[in-house]
Image (tube, rainbow over all chains, first blue to last red; front, top):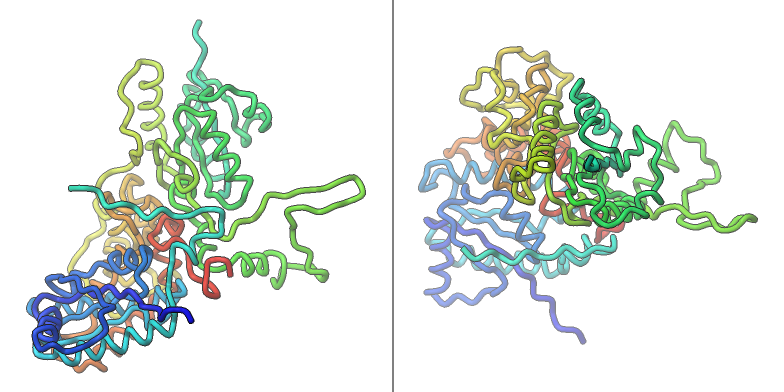
Length: 155
Length: 338
């Protein structure tokens, strides 16, 4: 019996709403899947598509972007920019053969700790069902070459 | 009299345009000829691979390599010329970042073979003959190079000293780079640091384009044949996908000057790893749909309608840089082998 696959989800959470939702989920001791690794960004509009691609290339099985609800962005419309980018990114990821559930966007306000936890649980199950992405080994190998994962330079 | 420095130029998966671009430096080609001895240049001189194999290591002073790594032969030649060359230049977009050949990374080897040898209106191949790497005939065994699943850039296979982008590189840039190399070889002048991208500017193509640019809010994107663009106004403002804002300059904005959006052949801006992702980001930012007050469903619908007018985002944003992008290829049938 093999062990259950535990997906790695990189979560980009906005400072003003979704990161606080995660914080609330923590302080309220809500139990939810520990698979999402939160990264705090100032705004969901800060998430460069390169971040998403790099996460997927370097070992993540999924990426979650979370921001304030439309109309509630701390920077007025940063989340609308994130949504525009996300919709176009999804169209491109489809061409690159990346399954729909692997990259998701959600809105969670600072009071929606339970909602965020539920969505992380759900996404974890969806990606668990898809299996590992393992881009480096399963997609890029087999040409006779392995792509070395770059070691971050010291600043 | 001391011997002249040795120049080589080789092609792998490419169209041959890079060779022509070298000859396109006009009368300077005579200077190149007077300074260098040609050591290997299949397009214009009759050298064989065994000549190169017999050179001592480092015998070639400058090797201009164009073309992507498509099969085992191009990979073998890359290793051979790296060994025999002091300076190896990834010349042109294919060598630098995969270019058009690497668009096949969006599909599989099987699908590529099917298009080339199988189902295609211009084909008559009833027995479905496809090339094999080895076949036994009465006279012995015949071999062909192995066709790889994934197209790679030159630097994914061997160590590269310099990159000269462009599809093809522009003659004034080629000549400028050759002058630097010649000064280094003949007068001991300092060469650019290894790994430099040469023959480029550090600003975007937009900097070189004199079209009038204004605040953008695009409600529908057009393909080039769908509209006749205004010759004075920024092409992106008019809804034509122009890669200028995510592409390094140095070409002089030649394409936008003739009403064609920048294709992106000079590659990503300095500090950018993935040109396609940056272009995606820029294009998404000028989409003129979606207001903060809208309901979620309406937002997605309005923005989605504009996004749908961008046909083939991956093929457009990665037209030249697929092999050098973060993901490098598409996942097909669960892996990269399809």
